[in-house]
Amino acid sequence: MKVLLINGSPRTKGNTFLALSEAARVLEQNGIETEIVQIGTKPIRGCIACGQCKAKQLGRCVFDDDVCNRFVEKLDAADALIVGSPVYYGQPNGSVLSLIQRMFFSAGSKVTNKPAAAVCVCRRGGATAACQTMNMPFQMMNMPIVTSQYWNIVYGREEGQAALDAEGMQTMRTMAANMGWLLKKIHADGKPDYPEREEWQPMHFIR
Image (tube, rainbow, N blue to C red; front, side, top):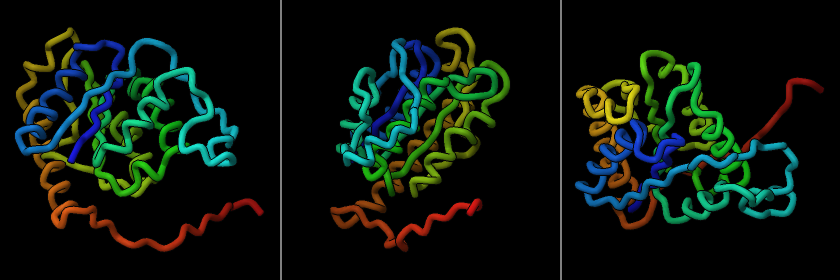
């Protein structure tokens, strides 16, 4: 089993990385492989609703000039997903939202049923709103959301300060232990045991 952790901070070794690293350490202790990937500092385009990924059945975004499709490729080998982000103005990093929206719309079948968790890192406030925003795509994709003893929040401003948030680090460890436990239950028989679901019945409220 493997968990893909996305570092949504432009800082490669900042507080978001520290929080994800703590979670990855516990997952590894539970015999689960991890990979932390970072979005970097280059632009990530937003979805323009062109629909070409669906029309052409690409399984990826039609635009291939940023990291989106590189991360889509990693979803094939991932059994669960953790997405971490710094909090900007009470919201996740805009690049993270652009990435998730394009990944899930173009390659949703690669994440459906896979456990997921959002991790938010902030100086003081806004993290709960950011977590709610990040969890909403998981809910729409039938991804079991992994919880902890508290919201998946770590505090720290300057690089390295997250390590001083004892409760925040413990929250990361508990979340990772919960994810490891859930993955082992899902894969107990050697293959994923997912529920059967009804065919989607979409409707619009304007006729």
